[in-house]
Image 1 (tube, rainbow, N blue to C red):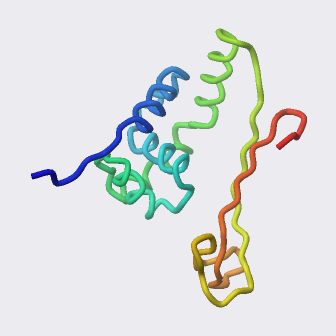
Image 2 (cartoon, rainbow, N blue to C red):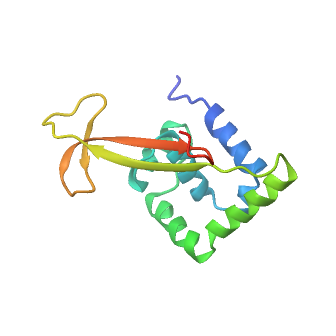
Length: 142
């Protein structure tokens, strides 16, 4: 009897890229799972457990997901990742820049639908909202 199945393509490809870029130098599996979850579906740390499990992985415990954020500061992940990517970029094709931003927009609508889901907005209101992401190149072109 089959109890479950999963396609490992996305986690394996993302993990391969993570290793190729040498970000695995962080040695933090829970942090990688948060990165993977945010690539699939930008959501809360709490909901990231669901996203990781839907990818067919054994998700880290929620409290474990909270601790990598403390380690990010303590171990200066930002500097480590920036330095690692800079070195990788110099060894390969040279430098490039990618800017990425995610935010939410809420709607003055009473009911949610397939696009707009009820959530707690930045304005501290419970309204249907959507998540919007934007990628731009070094010239600002989306």
